[in-house]
Image (cartoon, rainbow, N blue to C red; front, side, top):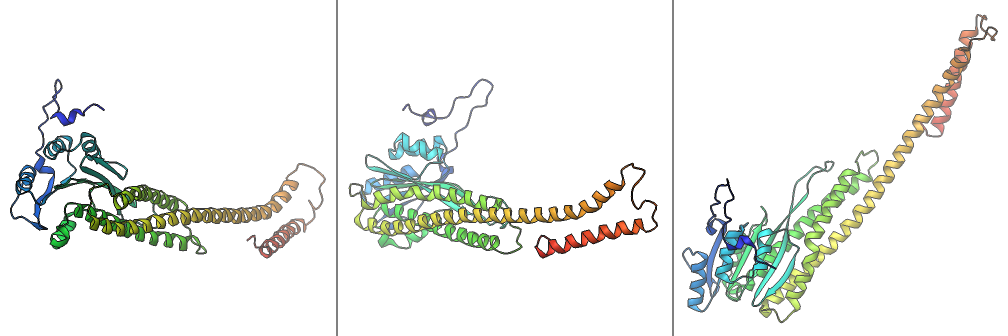
Length: 356
């Protein structure tokens, strides 16, 4: 695969275009810290300085956090840490499936993040939005690249810094903490979706409720979006916990097994949501069909009663000279009596048969 032009430097300006000024890499850096024996060194470091500090000491690791870097910024980071071009391309483009790839001594892990949006039950709107977190894991560095406005990692960093003993296990600790935070959001979102499914189920089976099918279809589509974000992560977690050839400490594998268990539970719950919503769609369609049949019976009943005066008016509207009761003084009230009596009998019959 040929190298991407964007990794060679800023794009040259075309005729008539203004030259593009590269944005400094520091603009994409959320935080950059050097950790030795589980404790963060004081001071602020640029990513080149941080990696130099670690390698001069021969101990510790660098944790560099990036937010939506562009190709030029990511190329600068790649040159410093020796990242593979294919992994860098995925980190810039985003919209990747969850996966695990190994490039020599560096692991590249993609995780999809999810977020739940508040919404009304009977409205059609976005419920689940997704983003990405990419993790580059080396022997003396870990780089997290986040895309999307949710699942920030600042809290993860603070929690790890408050537990030096755990952080002293190395950069793989960060990979576990990020995966754990992402899977925890899966659990939270799935619980909110479960509440939505329960409310829709109650609405569908409540007599007289006018819930339409469109919100159920919308929720089912959002569950599909959630499944696409969650389910593919099962295989990378499987490799991380069982593949002993990967450069991960044994203790971190044990922690990742707990993450895998939570992920499996969420994946099973999403499958249940999909089945429940399919059943709700069938029930809602059946409810709509029954309502349509009821409406058609009512329309047919009123049409039958309207047919009686229409028929009589049609008969007496014919241009014949000799017709019964035309000159009889009681003919007009008699015809009205017949019409009202016939309509009354039909009304009683329809009500008895629950057509009206």
